[in-house]
Amino acid sequence: MNTKKTKFINCKKCNKIIKDPGVLHYKNGYPCLICKACIYKELFDNDYNESLVKKWCKEFDIPFLEEEWNRFLNLAKEKVDFSEPFAYMHIPPFGKYLAYMKLHDWINFTYEDGIELTKWREEHEEN
Ligand SMILES: [Zn+2]
Image 1: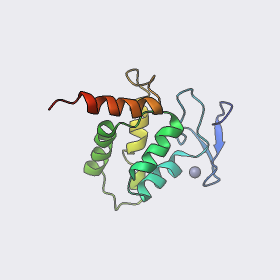
Image 2: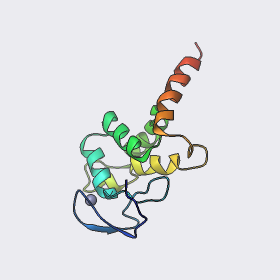
Image 3: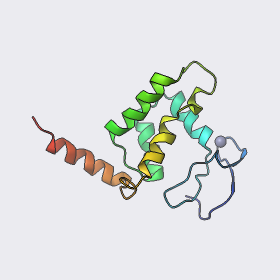
Image 4: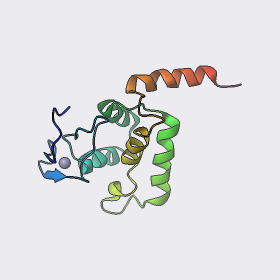
């Protein structure tokens, strides 16, 4: 994690100089040193593989909750033509999910909480 709030980042992956809104931020407001486009592209290129999504949830310390995640993924699948160039930048599921997890209902939930919450939900499921 970056140690200071900076206006620009030098993306560790594509090596471009990036500023907002091309940068994702941690819950404490610090920028991620890999740019938004690189993160979205990696997820897209890996077909939103669940373990990769979890890796990024862990990086941003947000819970991975399958049901919530799938809502954003399905929305993108419905609305975006994935054969278009830069399709990964349109209604980006991870960006939408990260923003959602920063809202007040979820902001205090960590990645570890997500694992426990998933278990808890399974145990409390009816039927
Ligand atoms: Zn980049």
